[in-house]
Length: 355
Image 1 (cartoon, rainbow, N blue to C red):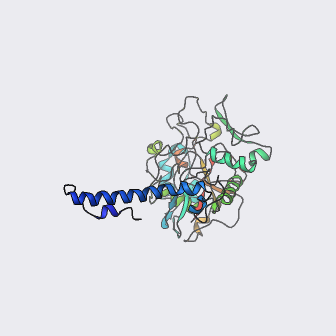
Image 2: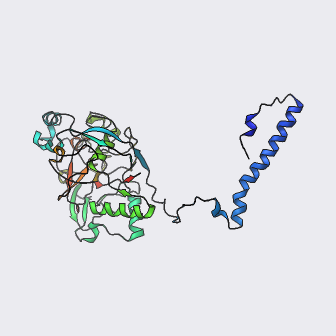
C-alpha cells in the first residue's frame, strides 16, 4: 500500500468523471489506512504484538527511566590551555590576589585533536538520576559508607563545613530538588554510577577525559569562558558566586551564605543558556569530575591525539567551577583537583558515552 498515491495525481473537482476517480481512489486508500492502523491492535489481541518490535528491543522495561539526554560532540582540533599569559590573568583578576605561578599548570597551550565523536551529558547528573542508581543497587556513597560524611551548608552560620557525618548526597544542608545536580559524590561514586548505567543500557558510559571536557566546554571558542570573555556575563550561562554580595575573594569556608541570596546553591540543570554545542552548565553550578589523574606539568608532554592524562597519580582532575566559585575558577582552561575519595557540597559530574 502506498499512502502517497493520492498525492501523485492531479484531479479537477469541477469534472464529474475526475471527481469519481478521485473519490474511488480516496476510499480505497482510506480502507487500506484503516487496516494498517488496526493491524497492531488485532495482533495484540492474539498475543502477536512482539512481531512488530525490533529484533534487538531491550527486555528491561526500566532501561530508559534514567533519561540522561546526550549531545554528540564532533571530532576536531583545538588549542588547550590558557588563552592569555599567566601575567595577564593575574592582572585581569586583581581581587583574587593570585600571582602568575598560580596558573602554571594551564601551560603550555598546546594542540589537541579529538579523533572520534563522542556523546556527553547535556546536563550534569541530577539528584533524581543518582537516587535511581542507589535505589536499584543499594549503593552507599563514600560519604555514607566510610563514616566521615560529606560537606554541607550550615543554616545557622551560613557557612559551608565538612566533613560532617550528617551531610551526604541526599543532605547537603540546603533544600534539595530532584532537578539539581547531585553533590557530595566522590570520583569513585561517579565511576560506580557510570558502571551501573553501562550495564543497564548496554552502552559504555564513563567520565570524559580532561581534554574532551575542555574541548566540549569551549565548543569552538578561545575565550576565557565559552560564551564570553567578560565575567560580568556569567549570570546568563553560569550559576556562580554573586560578586555584588561577595566582593572579596576567599575560600568557600570563609564565605557566608545569606538566606536571601538568590544565587546560593546549585540551580536546576538546564535553566541557563547553553554553549554552542548545546551543553548546559559547563561553567559553574557544580565542579565536574573528569577521568584523568592530575599532573601539573602534563601539558608539556601531552600527545596531540586523544590525551588521557598521566598514567598514575594521587589526585583526580575536576573542572568547571561551582555555584560558590569565583569567576577566576570558572574559566575554560582552569584546572583543579581532589583525591578520588573527596566529596564536597559543590562537586558532581556529567557522563560521557562512546559511540
